[in-house]
Length: 156
Length: 171
Image (tube, rainbow over all chains, first blue to last red; front, side):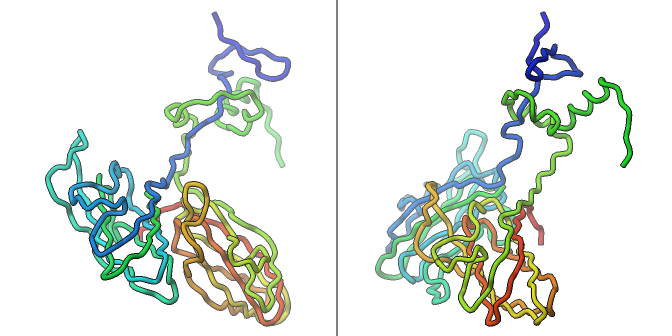
């Protein structure tokens, strides 16, 4: 039994190679970027990740293998220097890390900057490609506290 | 212009590879797997026009849209874009001397900025002979919103376009 569809206001057509079902292509364009995390943390002198964890084995971000790089965009409430450490590792097919510990990709400081007192940015990794499965992003300050609102965008 | 006589069968074949021709028909959503076969010439690199228009430059820092409200963005929804390009043309017979600066910020899932203010991406002065094109490249991409501001001691009328590219640029 042929499958028919309404080709226009008054014409029925059989589905065939010459008259295929009209379709609207959905989700055809790959999404080149995804927002992976939006979080606010009160940064203090203890190194903790963007989710507030001090457990060194916990990842901040998981399932990141498809991303060539991560872009960390953040707003700090005051012009305070913030230290950061970026760590990454790979997992097996079950999602278990291949081993304990991390590879340190970068560590540094968002220095106090009169030109940009609040907004900071870091590309992860800074030069090469990423494609790691898990990342742990730790921050701390030398003294006092500062509120840090972060957004991490994964770029495919 | 030349005409070509084709059969109805040939026309329908062409419609299959020309989605625009089928757009007026009733549509059904399909999954990506099928879509891949419908777009054999799909190009993964996209360029989008974010803004196009005319700006009256004067002694105030104005967004390309004309406003002087610092909290307002010039372009939004720019997260996917790797870099932006601002191409323009200033009217008038005098040499062009327009100061410009670029700001950026990120927003949360609701579109609310993560904090107040902007990140200063850069600033420069556009100096060209009269009636020449200029182009500014903004390489710091993936911010959600940008504000492009211009200022000129001599009032100028600038026609410009801001485009954005999603491509990955190996450098």
